[in-house]
Image (cartoon, rainbow, N blue to C red):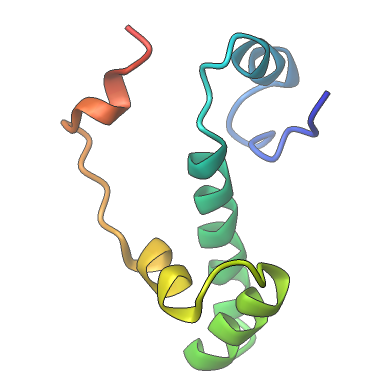
Length: 85
């Protein structure tokens, strides 16, 4: 089973249930992790350097893609957040 990167927000049992039933977006979890890592890096490095560090951790993503992930605004009323129902 996949390690729970959302442990601070949801318990392992719920995460496992969501993964088993294909109710969790891998891309969404990855983007969440990138945003959290950026916040941590930003406290120790300038923005550009923090982005470069993330790019080295996620070499399959372009610099601009990582930047878009970090600065993307979340629309809570968007239908994509209600696909579980």
